[in-house]
Image (cartoon, rainbow, N blue to C red; front, side):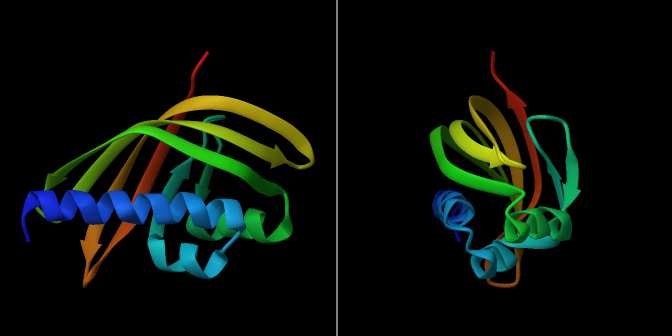
Length: 125
């Protein structure tokens, strides 16, 4: 596989993840997110895969939209680093939030698919 093919696969997996988050598609997220995921929200709240999915299932966290911009992927062997900006509309424990953030996430090739192992977001002013 060339780096260009890997970049395209990671980009597609990331778009699939954003769509799954908005739909609340836990089955898709179970596939995309690695079991050892570290997920740091733009608020600096840190969660594991299980904690993040539990909040989505319970309705404590409900994404209404997640619109990525300027996605860039760099591949280093079996690891991909993705950066970008996203406009987000989300309800957190019933409170409506709308903001823009910059993010970095890391994907690792596990078997025949790319899985996300880390997410770090920073809210933009």
